[in-house]
Amino acid sequence: MRVAVLISGRGSNMRALISSCRTNEGPAEIVCVISNHPDAAGLSVALDNGIKTEIVDHRRFADRASFESELGRALESADIELICLAGFMRLLSPDFVNHWRDRLINIHPSLLPAFKGLDTHRRVIESGVRVTGCTVHFVRSKMDDGPIIIQAATPVHPDDTDERLAERVLHLEHHCYPLAVRWIAEGRVRVIDERAIIANADITKTWLINPEA
Ligand code: GAR
Image (cartoon, rainbow, N blue to C red; front, side, top):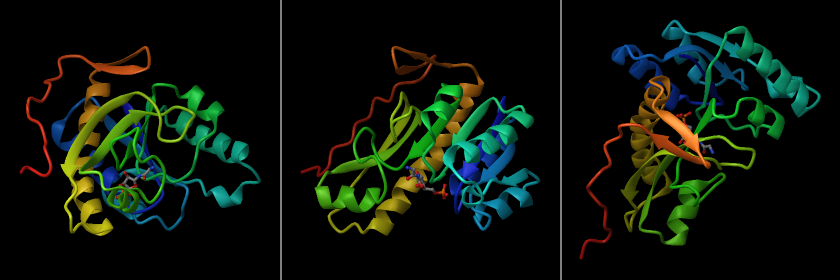
């Protein structure tokens, strides 16, 4: 399965996807990385890994439609079958999202549908919730919305800072995103009634309680 990763910055999830696709020799291949920022740090990581990169700088386009039509051209010309948003910080229009329906996935650093949007970890800490995590989901036209493929959870500690929490959640992200891509490429993921069903998935039997006593 030919996969494109869209980034806007650091690209640590992109790096996790590149290395898992390489080492697992699975059916997914990262064929290109596209950034909307020319100076995204992830671009050099992709190049160092021999992966084609492309910059589609949103500031060079008059409107969202022309930005997205250039993005679409880059994706179609590379015969992309699956798009992974990995810290891609542009909202995509309903037209774009519908065109790529069930072929476009995203990772978000919370247990969706809680804490959609930006500044997630600060809001998680301020809210007082005891558990947070990450979600990989199919993209729909509403922000951070769509059928959930995989989630992982971590406790929120009383002395957590945004940075410490982000680091712990990022570790989970790097585990979850490659799994989601592998399952899709293996043809094990179907969307039925807006729920993602994973064939032959082992359902975890552990649970997380916080605080414990
Ligand atoms: C990740 O934590 C990702 O979940 C988040 O941006 C970070 C990108 O890091 N995405 C969102 O908040 C999207 N709503 P990375 O560039 O190192 O992968």
